[in-house]
Image 1 (cartoon, rainbow, N blue to C red):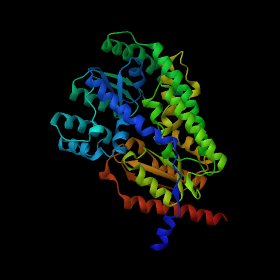
Image 2: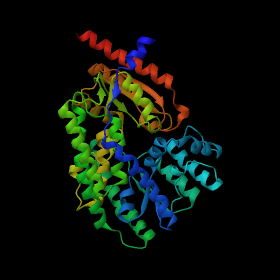
Image 3: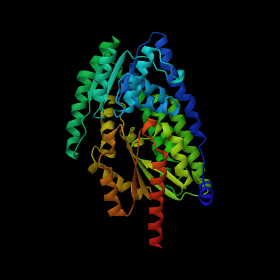
Image 4: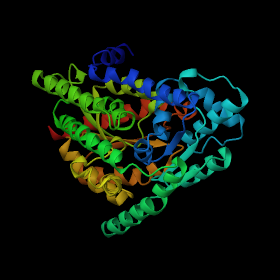
Length: 425
């Protein structure tokens, strides 16, 4: 036991300075929604990727998944989920959706929750169906809140030739349904010029962000996937703002400095480089990172954070609506709408990022992301000799989180990697 503790004390995390900017900016974003509502302005909730349309019309917008991440980071999840369960919600349903239903119950029934995670009831629901459950979630909120809802269907491509017909289908919906309904809600014409301005800034910011991604290829890596998860926020909360460009430029400069000095994110050495599949565990970021660091392991690539405008070089601000749709579908092609699609991307990442192992984070309440994980592990191990494990938990709900399970499976993964290394010597 003492030997194990000594080994755990051997490694530590070298935190980035730039990521410390995020906390105050994120707080500012969520506070601005409460302020807007108090001032009598219209606010929206966006389920899925339609929030740029709200920003273009000057509507203060709450991003559904971003709110769940914020609550998880601010340790505000348990009482809200408890309110949802008291209201009759089943715990196996999407914890993001339960979180919002719980918040509605807390507001309507005066159930005390942390003030900094309290969000006001929306005047408009925007629902872009990237997840199969988004349409049901949007309908649930529409029936519960009785506020207008604008929806966009984004069917997943199952093969390469599906892509263009589905893009065209989504574009027609934007022009014939989404934008006219948004104009009717706002009482004015859609602001295409503002959307173009937002996308021009986004393109610059995301191009710099993609330069930061390249540093994951370095051995050792100067940053972690967790650092990048924290750094997703400018894409949503600062979209169209110069601060988003400034943030990623500062991040890039810090990564260059670290690389030049040979500074690893894991000190004194990076022993294992692992892939992280599925959701970022927002409520448990610190706990899981400490466990990984205790083994000298760095999570350096994952499917989830790659979804946000992965190919900004193709953003064309002169075609704002069309280019948004194309970006959303480029994500679906890059990360896979099916296990078959995704295995191709993962096979490339193994070599690109010099991966030693796979961690599949199987969320109990978001099962669509878990499809084929065991088959993928088997296939990758057979073809490339890279072992993998499955961790069963949730994005934010602590009821499904077992530290003992995670300890056992991480120990097994790193023992497998070490055994393979010894056989190669």
